[in-house]
Length: 132
Image (tube, rainbow, N blue to C red; front, side):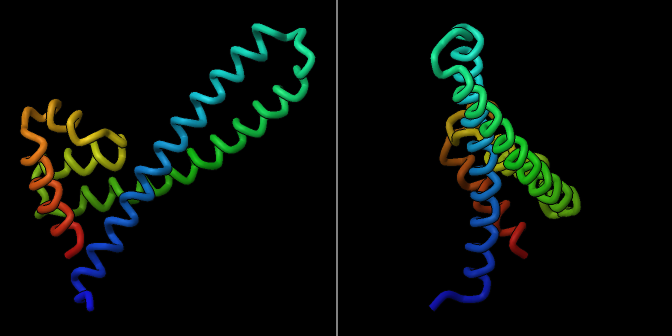
């Protein structure tokens, strides 16, 4: 059976993973929109022009909805990080890069000039502080 602290930690991780997932989905939708834009504008005489325009509109609406949700959750996340006095700047940076900017562990390690293992240690410590 999980302790209260473990459950709290797991819930916090779930929230952060959701934030990262939203950022990833928005990025993927924007990529898909760019492809459709190329198809629509390069082949405007194509048979399925109207279908592509409708698909583009649907994707734009989906991007806008996801982006608003992401911005709201991200703002709450960043505000919470700013209020935490126990987190140092490096730990905050790891959390922001991982969840707000949706970066991979290796990229974070490279940017901070740490090993991936050390970035994981910083992340784990920051999550523990976040869950207090």
